[in-house]
Image (cartoon, rainbow, N blue to C red; front, top):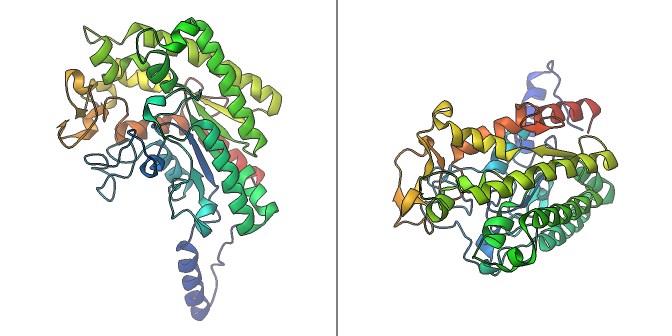
Length: 372
């Protein structure tokens, strides 16, 4: 329980209290709820730095606008979605699970298990070789909980996980880096698109049920954005700058089915256990009218090369825009920090069109009243 200092105290007691508060602030706050992150490159904050994979963001100009001005493994010019959610939680950013710094009191903050390139399916992202597929992310979550129990005991560990917030972002790679990776891919020959979408959603439900079984009781689940509108897809599949129809169809099939699956899980486990974030709607607001949000373009990546700056990787040799705040996309697939901040603002306080059955601000307020 968080302790409040009394406002009436002697000068000596006040000095002692100030020193005590300083000591508390020097370590992770026990008042902030823990935060766990699972998924792909949209939410990876550095796990892939520790893996033998080409799916990395550990070289300049990644991180050019991060507080350290150095690449961190985030696929952004600065902070990503989990960082910004942590700010709203009043907590420090979670560390990557593979970071050697994640030990001791740092475990109380939570952990980020996400890994660029992964999908719902284990065969998604095979070209990236060594990535933390979802089975491995969940196994590491089990390891994390064992470390937590050793630190604070079983009861406190269970309470911390049950009172946490969890974010999971999956699905985009199952289309971009699997079904549509190459013409006549294995999955596209195995499934017609509607059947593939149903299969993905059924497999995603298994992951979410596993998270619930492992103690997570507030899980923010993001659908895919408008996949056909990413600069990489425009460069590869669009001749006139319009969003690629087949990828847009995939997103339009996947997201409503995922939302219905979450409604079914909430009916089973309790309303508000799984919170559906409409990433498609948020991103498409930018794409359809970037100027309304203060952006100059949603068709060009800030960092890249070729048409729409959408080809290849973002590297020191790439074209680099001068004003990252004017771009929706930082690299061929990932938003800028400014776009991420607007996305999170919709998750926090948006209407039911953006997040349901309630937004995160409502969740946090309700849980605070209940003493969660």
